[in-house]
Image (cartoon, rainbow over all chains, first blue to last red; front, side, top):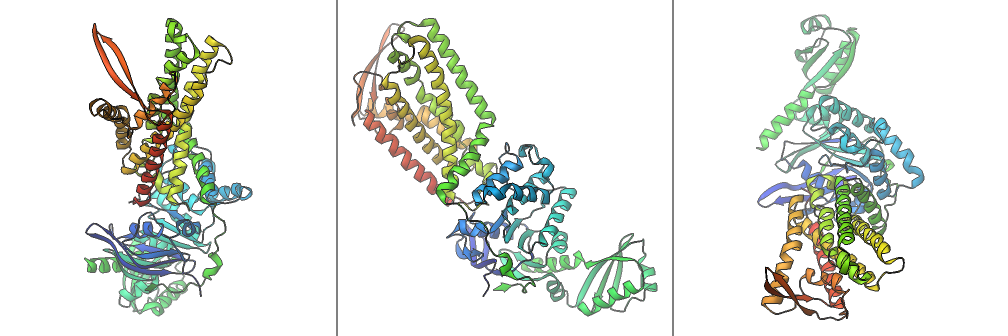
Length: 315
Length: 298
């Protein structure tokens, strides 16, 4: 029997008369990236703070790697890397010093520390700033150091609270790139976000929270197919300029494609019916037509439509 | 129970916690070391060191200019320049280094960084306490260093009255007790300024008023007031030393524009002062920790 990486049982938190989290039952197993979605105030950050024992539950319990967070905070967080609320590092410390502290407190042996710190700084592309004071860093640079701090001990579970919120487009892209890199390391990344593009781009599974209640938790593909009533949407990128009308005419697009819209000079969005089987045929058709397909991904709008329909339903 | 589809990756493969987190007593000095580094590099540390140096220079100049009774003996010298000033200096440095110790972690969001680590809240609390204590004590050491340099100049090597040693020990205990109270106030708020202001007002004004009210109007010994206990830092230089558990009242005569002013000044015995300070230290540290343990990082 495997121990879930994250588990909550009837987890509830009330602030006065306001219920921020309402009997959340969630079990997440294995190494993957889970997007924890929900509008502002839905309870995402509250859940993460409860998991890390930054706040206390009104009812219920939660576990990281099977260890109850509120009974054994140290044990639970020993196996987790945490980034919540864009924390600040003491401004006079350098990244090297801050990470040295993290490594020291986490019990990483001195012989391994230097190598690990260099690795994570390189992973978040902050090696050149390793000896500069954190107080002078931009928000994006600080966030990258925070991510490095969450990874320095190579944790099996990484909890991230809106890691790219408040960053400029370049910073967001950098964080997203780091997250994609993290996915290759076979650990659980549990990430709250309200950026659907980020979740679509990075996550394997999504959990949607609204008004403190869990609406669903499943793989991204299942969520989209379950709630879109057999309707799908993919974004196709080509290595050349394309025209939606010409593509439909020339490529022999199957009739299951209900709509083709132009996203950019070399990008189209195809809406279709027929589920995964239809999607497979569409991809094969496009490739056979030799149109220079270089990208074929689940449309961000598919998740957006699910999100909007489910969240509004909960209001 | 919502459960996602099983991943193709074996969960066990990544679920090994690789490093053993050090026990509480080892984590406290680790955190304290980094907190202290932050203090030592801060502007407030430089500013406070500048203030202490400035006070030291002024005292050196005044003592050199007036001499007379100030340098009549090592006891009178240290009584005036250490015994009379140490308790005020302690309040000043403790407010500066401890006033925002806990509240600042919420306000500046540095607490979210620390709370992401596998540490108990008590580790954070005591780590910060230790760092603030060392930072504040270093200012006392700086001030004492200036005085001892003066003492060496006026009285030569070896002229250290034993009362100075007792007074310094009492001062260190007072520093710890005031720091405990400061951490308690800091734990009450999530805004640094409140901790600073409340501690400063209480120790520079509030406790003094309470002490006077109890001793002068109620004719009771103000054993519940910590500033009453701090009086021994200076009174230990008086002969005979009151080592006991009950205080003594001293009638002080003054002269303001030819009007004679008489004031009753109550001073704790050394043992009594130690009990009061230790009591304050334990009660405030435990109360502050109790609050911090229950505080939401929300």
